[in-house]
Image (cartoon, rainbow, N blue to C red; front, side):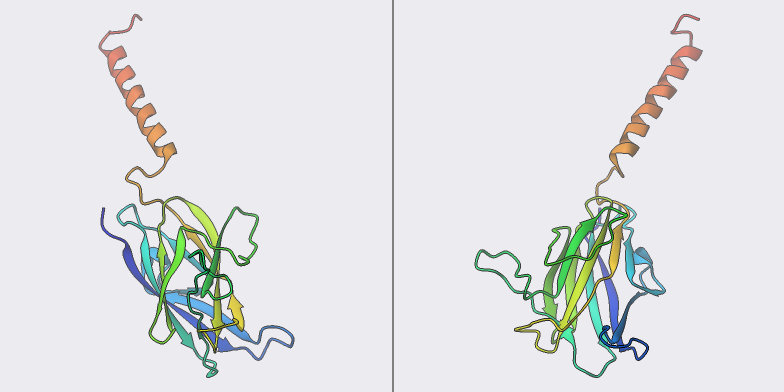
Length: 197
């Protein structure tokens, strides 16, 4: 199996004059050309499909701030015990089970983790382990003071891991394969007269 697949996803922020106060006066979307995560589409959800060929995904989220206001990804902070600091973080993440579609709130999910902020806080590197099939929500935090916070605006898109990075696609597939092998062997034995008729 190959290493993690490298993917680039643009994250756009634009002013939106159609939103009256006190609503967030911005609109957001993601865009990627990579067909493993839904290439060619603008939207608010990523679908990760490794086709069982890669050990997850290494994603570069590249911020495209079209507001002219200087928003950046927040820094990655650590608490004294080395856990991620939810108050100084570029992203929160939570696994969800539909119909729950609630946003993450100061949560971190080890399957989809921010690893580094680069290029003057315009690029956020994230590793998606893609270990199992799972829906999830993540929230980007943006600030004009990214090294100290607090975040000023937040956007919460979603994602789906469609498959795992294991060689066998799922436990169900493994069971079906075993059942199929047994059925074929039993049919062959019957045809050869091993069983009494």
